[in-house]
Length: 204
Image (tube, rainbow, N blue to C red; front, side):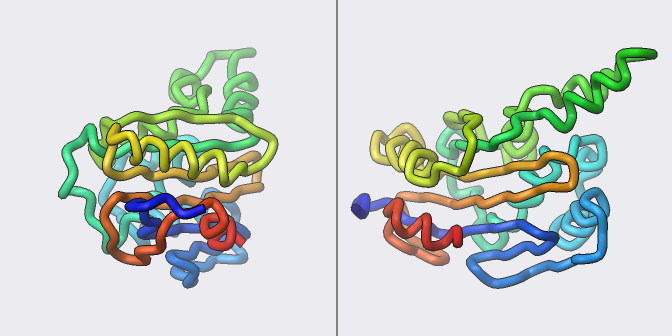
């Protein structure tokens, strides 16, 4: 069922070392490892944010997906508190947790400890784009598109925010996938009326 006045204005998918914006490939690096692939995304879509290099891989993936998602849809029309971020994944921050645990036998790494909560990726996205609206990070076995996008749509319907970056950001060892949506109350870009069914079709 469509939600009146809510639109999917942009999408981004990153999987198997390929990035798509609105269903169209925008970057491929099939023969690289994950760190080099993410560095390639950074160089291609921003390259002017030194803090990126200190992030863990999960945060880099979510940060890069947001950069691609928001290309050509500037967010400076909104006050900081009017944009929310709602994300989910299956592995939480386990990849970084394991790396941090490996360091505690000698000298525990504060640089890794910072990233031992999955919602830190939301913090990195919010700092970069100055988002201060409602945010939440959920951990579930699979990407529950009706729940995540529906939660975002409820925030928009209630007037709590005017835009939401929402979706899935999963990374464990070399495995990685991001699927992000930009939902807004004003149409632009893709301007597809929101429904869970539409969001699911865009994910395939």
